[in-house]
Image: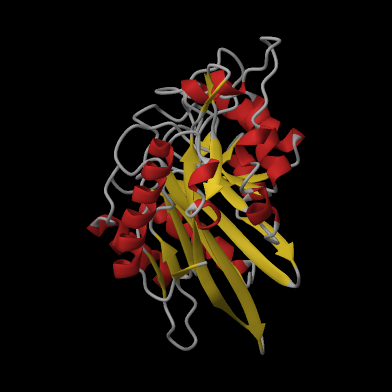
Length: 328
């Protein structure tokens, strides 16, 4: 995300340029190690005036820093994707194209969607189809002529069927769903996950609650089903409880005799560290495993205490609710 404080933090001394590169200094290795790294872009890149909540537009430098950190793909269907109307939606897409960041979820037109969805990724002899959907656009109408994957059951089922027709080894569905700040998925999420699996989806990754929710990997023979209901916040500046961190999901796909499976599934807890340097709040994504025993790293004991609390609460939740998905 890109709240006002993040925009101010990225503004350079010249008062014109923005730089978010340092945000990913401590997590870059984890991101770039993946064959394919995918993230949810929950802002528009609509140009100035730059603004956070409630109608987000971040500098292009945010996406450039994500690319530099190793993110290959952005899913763009979420409740903020039309915050700046048609021009904002279009400029976001064109900016990602200019940065060579693959994307899906929002499109310039219905014809554009028809030619580009599902997004197909081919890597290391695997073919992956990616679909991105949102349950809401915050009651802002989708601009006339534009195309947004706004959830309707028939529409989603049709897109899943199209993905299956590509003969992809795995179909990944990104769903922007659920209730904000709830640490357990609601009945609607669970039901939609089951419907999507039955229609042919293999992997479901959720966002929108801004807090982490459980992950489940099915170990049933001949079945490839993985769901992580919410990844929480990767980088943001929210104040609600448990919104100051998230988790990265790492999936390893294997293929034997033409059958693809998730051979390994794990998570990396991340925390948003916000020290004040030169009278300006900074933002860093920290992999918790590398910093949970380094109190000397933090600017104040309070920062360290907050991270430790987040780690303990997150592990308590995930240890009790995850199935076949352990911390890396």
